Length: 458
Image (cartoon, rainbow, N blue to C red):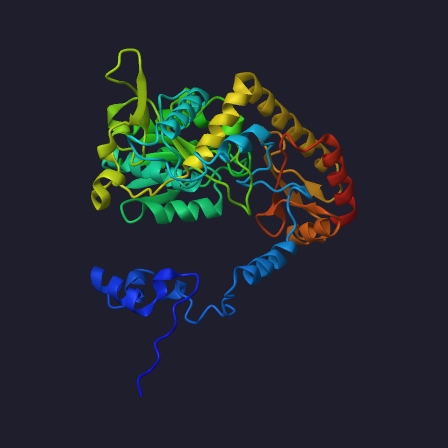
């Protein structure tokens, strides 16, 4: 008796057995497992996922998903002090109005000769970001700030011909993991731990550079802890003196009050535009930027699309098109320096609208407000028995560390806050968490957190 082949999955068109076999034959693979050969066995799940049977009607699927989502709690509906890379900022209504227009509503960046409106929108975004960053070249967004950092370091490696990268700031473990994975096997990331006060250890960086094999010094502004390191300009001199490039990942929302990386010697700036008019979305809503000066060596290594303003055959008229398209994987496919996919252009358009609305004065007010409320939050929480603020004398932007010295751990404090309708900070260790405030966090919100912590930390 002939065995019945497994049925096609209703949500995965290419799961039909004949189609799957044809696709595997076309690429010369015996099975789907061949694609995962380089993933260590220790990281693989050696059992089925245990998923429920697929719901075969749209109505049943919608009902099921609504039930799952109903069990969640949104930061819009709950007082939140979560940050650590994804931030609750005000998104003006006009941003949503523009990005939801049908001619823009896709993450794709468009194609030549048919999509000049989208090209112009992306060019406007790049121009506004260049002004904010005091740079001359900014890319069409990549997937997120993590990828942008990895790409910046790979660019540095291609420019210098060197292999090693120094990570010198307090960095998110998730980001560090992504970057280490993204730059391998061409590059090796060496950690140079910050000093006890959270600032980069300049002596240790100098010693690590002595070998002469470093492609880039990678710093964060501010650091994962929110700390603003006054030693960032000195890192530029150390990097350049050793023939390395200086790569700085920054929070663009801080650039109304903090100097952009280019102002203190960074060769490549990178980061995530989520704070610029992009909603949080289950921890996402991200898109990464890269920025340099108009240096041919650097521009040639951008693997991403760049849009430029060009004259047309009609005098006085201009168009918008790809700059040096031959650099990209879109043009040369597998021969490209990196594969960057269709990027996250829609978020770039949203960020462009946001920056156009805010202008220089608006960005300054945003930064001033966040700095002031961060300082206020640190002072109020430091007065709570059982709470300490590490590096309290340093300047922090949005994020800041909180250490709990009472009987409860950071995770237990967070659970107790949640019972009272407050999202606490992101837990970093048994006793420490990162708390965050933005322009949406009022003084009354901070006072409520402080008063609630007095009841929960002991």
